[in-house]
Image 1 (tube, helix red, strand yellow):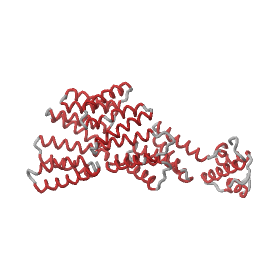
Image 2 (cartoon, rainbow, N blue to C red):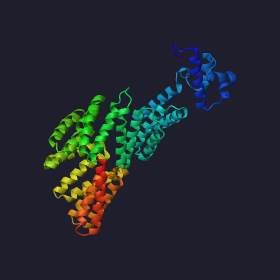
Image 3 (cartoon, rainbow, N blue to C red):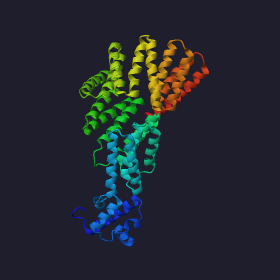
Image 4 (tube, rainbow, N blue to C red):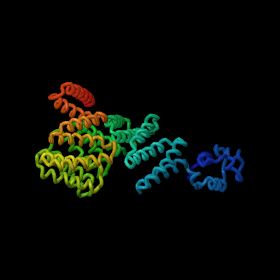
Length: 444
């Protein structure tokens, strides 16, 4: 017992801990008291009304199977929950996923039973992270994160923001891009209410970098650049080397889309040098792919192929799954431009194989590959295949609210059908107008 704790406070703490651990172990007062004291005396002890000698407290601790010091602690159950939570994180770090989840289930149950909501939410967050990134169980994560928000279990604004980020990631994995974007926007709106104590730079970086990505996907390039610049400032505050590098080259994406190609190229070259020097393989592969895109647009195909191949090789070395889509698609494009149709088809087959392995989260990559395959089939004179593939692609984009791509294909198909099927052409133009209205409302 800590120095300075008076007798009444000692009695209250010990009584509270005895009752909690007795209930936790499923013991009755009779079972704990037998041979040590009367039930009425134990009831007084648990209510903090009487002093308990340390020798008897030790006997009760042994019977409960907990250290004596735990019963003397200010909040023994809370300390134990925090220790169990750390153990689960250690298991996760050691890649023992089943044990990590087992420990988390124990923490979640105990925290819920005893009303420790902050630990409960932290444990659910950890569980969501494992389910999403290790098990790809996005539906379960959507349910868990939604449960936290609907019951308002979060104990701080930062916990609410982390929950929204987790929910947004899960929606992104599931294919509902609009719902994901909404979650990030909601998290950003909570910023002004964020508690001032503590370091929230990592949280804010995650929100800002996510919004950079989603605004870019939605075609809001100026908004994307604003968030990228904010993310870079926040990344510096995190004092995390990896975040700083990623935030630095993140802003090159909207810069390039806004016509600042040379600035984007310079950022990528500097970032690539730093990523190489720090053996950041994932970043080396991403930056190499993005540089290849710049050189491809300039018509410098030899240089572009060099960077695309490098990106592909590094992603392959890392077994990076859907990340391979980016260089593979660009390699297919260069092959198509040089009329190497067989090589182009080989790259597309590899993309479809990746999508098959990744499941529903690969919807965007699958639709992109279908659209490109349609282009190849049209070039080869297979008109019916072209139509079927394009319609399949637009259906995927529509289903997952990827409205910019759905709009583009609808217009392309409407123009195509205007030569042969005026009714279908009008339907597709109407559909394109609806997509465009929705996009404009989102970009206000």
